[in-house]
Length: 125
Image 1: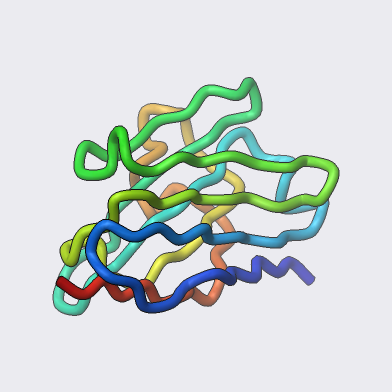
Image 2 (image 1 turned 180 degrees about the vertical axis):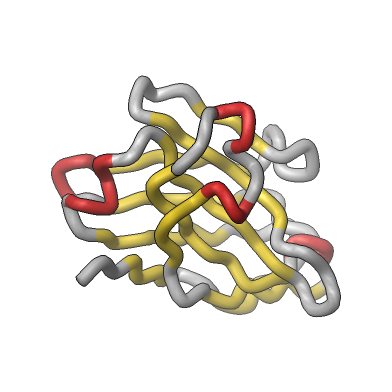
């Protein structure tokens, strides 16, 4: 059974930091790319940060320079370091694994085969 389990969410004040973790099985780490998405109430799920098998990383415009995606292959764990958090970063954060299309679609939620259950991040002003 494929499982992705996120952790590390919480409540923080504006300007603070959080680190999210996503633990998966070795199987979920066999795809080309994986990443983090977020969804705020009433909004579509949006791509936040992506990392691919050759180490390249890509970020959504709203988080560039503030968030860092990384992975520990030995632990089958994906991370998202979030710094300088803003109230508009408040959302449910999901990790996604196994990009099933070309990298041109890496920021499309529908392009991923596996998802975690989400972890809530709340940033207060």
